[in-house]
Image (cartoon, rainbow, N blue to C red):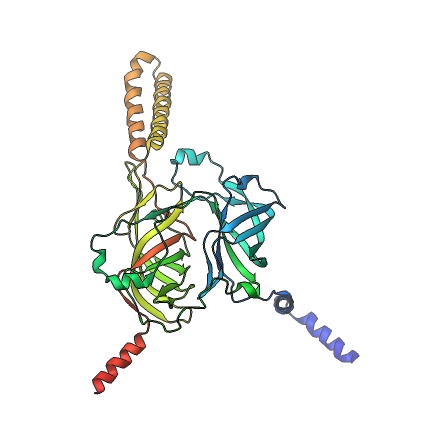
Length: 426
């Protein structure tokens, strides 16, 4: 035994340092993986939940400290596939774990002059757990904070020929939420739940268990779907053809049956975009959705357009009848700030040109250089005003949107092909 151990030690001493380092990394990764597997928490099938909490209007996020308790209510139902886990209105309690600095989100509320002097980072509370209270029961969610903001809704105008897309019976059969309802502008907290410990008595509280199990094979045109954007999109940075992905927040119910479960992934692209341009001309953005992937993996072609979006209340964005998002024209405050900056630039250029000319030409005076300096100042200030860009159209990640199906969607194309095959055989 002693001889064999001595032989092993000699062999290891003769090995190259790189080989020994590689062996150490492999052994370390194996031991670390085993340790992680042993300590990794068990995840339920309800991970990746989208939780939206309506807070009190008096709450100031910037004033929160570690240990503070934040209470609110669910602003929308929380779904997992075809199950409603928590209904809207359920009480939610969160405890601030610690504070961290985050980069401030972009907005088009003020011109760049104001944004340049605005702090780029802000303190954000970090929450690790949330407790949902309903009917005397408690359920714990492991959460991460996405954003805290005040939201407003923008919608596409009603099309004149929309009634031709579907019959009256089809419109009555499709159950959709009231997307045009006005909502309060109280602060809203958006959270993502990565794991859940849900009380068994709450799993089907107000759920969809009583719905029919016979699924219709076709979803009519005009059906509304509430989706959640999974990536940032903007008129200034996105390009035509860029892929856009979103997740269905609420199951689509047709004739008392869930036809498209929550969690379905919608895929589309940026069809057209116009970046913000000179002369304060705003940008525009046009999205279209072309495919959906059901939780089971079945991929279906669709044609859907944007019908509404929930944006920050400071966002100056509107939507036309075709679902195109456009930035609004600069307001009075925007123009007043730019005019003030232009006047300041003109004054500084005027004085600077006079000083430079008088320093170069010894016989120059204020009266003789006044005309030249004013012409140069007018050119510079005019160039500044001309080159001001308009408002951008920004859709940050986790933006809630409504889309409308432009044509019917066949959910079971296999059965349709089998039927046609049997008809051909006869």
